[in-house]
Length: 112
Length: 115
Image 1 (cartoon, rainbow over the protein chains, first blue to last red):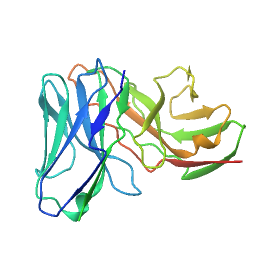
Image 2 (cartoon, rainbow over the protein chains, first blue to last red; image 1 turned 90 degrees about the vertical axis):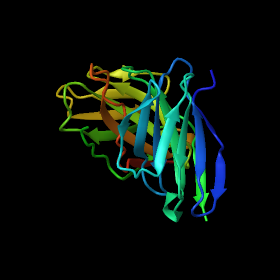
Image 3 (cartoon, helix red, strand yellow; image 1 turned 135 degrees about the vertical axis):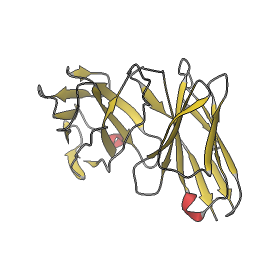
């Protein structure tokens, strides 16, 4: 079992561009959550997907959007990138109503 | 979700037990206590979680007080590789309304294991 996998591991984008990050959940998990972690801070919840719908959302602008596919994998899209979007983006997977949750290794996004 | 309070930093000698405290005085009955750690900007690594009973796994032990207002994570024989930021989080799980399972991270405890 590969656990939670994220791609790419690192990414450099220019301000104003758009980016797509990907996450494959742990086998048997159907719920995917995304977090943003700025340097020196704890992860901040962006949103959660279950049954291909956004179920819960944190305090992030509409520039942040996502998608979940029938195989439970997920994408995080960020439009009109700002320098402040530079961060480690983490994906966590879990089973609906289950207690376990595991994180991927993250995607390091740098906006220049 | 309830907030937690942890000391900002702790030191521990290699080979000794590391005891990391966490205060969660406003925890409610359907909230679990979770511990994760993060090593050098890698993704948070799951350590252990519990509801009200003490729990033990191959990594650590979790001791929850009877009133559930505080807990202690115990790493029985700390090694240099245990140097990390440790996060204590309380979170609701498994409600009928499918409330999300998002974690609210505080600043955590930076544990330094010293040789």
